[in-house]
Amino acid sequence: MTISSAVWTIAGTLFALGLAMLVLRRGLLAMFLGVELMLAAANLAVVRQAGLRADAQAQAAVALILAVAAAEAVVGLSLILRAFRAGRGLDAGAMSELRG
Image (cartoon, rainbow, N blue to C red; front, side):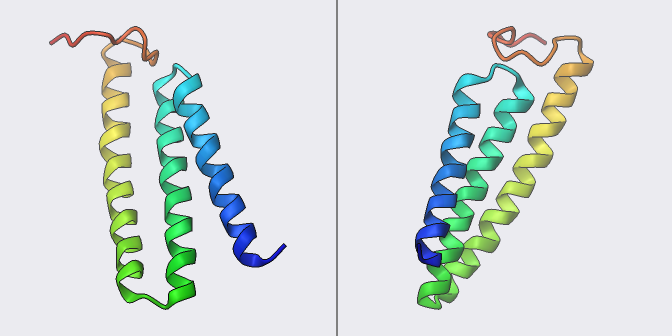
C-alpha cells in the first residue's frame, strides 16, 4: 500500500465514522463531534492533494478550512452549553421546537 492510498483510506474512514456519528447518535455533543471529524477528514484529503501538486491555493484553502472549523467549534460548543444550562438537556430529539 502506498502512502497516497493509505491517506485516502484514512480520510475515507474518518469521514465515514463522522457521518455515522452524525446520523446514529442523538446527543448534541456526539453529533457535533461527528461534524468535526468529517471536517478533519476533508482537510486531510485537501492537504494530501495540495502536497501532491504543490498548489499554494489548496494550502490556503486548508488554512481557511481550519479557521472555519475553529469558529464553528466556538459557536457550536457555546450553543450546546447554553442549551444545557437552560435545562433542555443534550438530546437532539427533545429540541424539536424553538422556545424563548
